[in-house]
Amino acid sequence: MKKLAVVVTTPPYSNLSVTALDYVETALKSGVELVGVFFYQDGVIHANQQAHIASDEYQCIKQWQALQQTFKLPLHLCITAAEKRGLSDEEPNNIHPIFTVSGLGELVELVNKADRLVQF
Image (cartoon, rainbow, N blue to C red; front, side, top):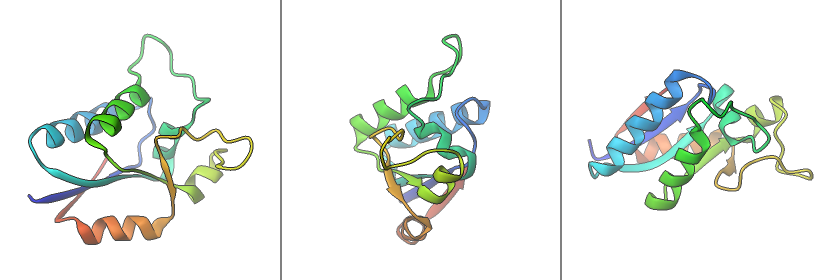
């Protein structure tokens, strides 16, 4: 596998989100080139700055932040899916700044750049 793209459609409070994070982190640490992560459907909830996950539960956003900062990992957010779930990049902006607001065209670009696509 040379280049990988990941699509996250599961919300941050799902156990599958932990699996997605573990998969992405393992791939990056193994030298796999990740062309980007695209958050779609309920996956966009990862970007909600106002979402409150109980303190005794896994804090996905902190892990996404660490991966984004350490590996300069592009994190794309489908704006249409986000707006349907109450997220906005206009005032008041409630999208975490580590995410790049994108459309489905960006997903097509990621798929074209990647040798493999994995969805969680």
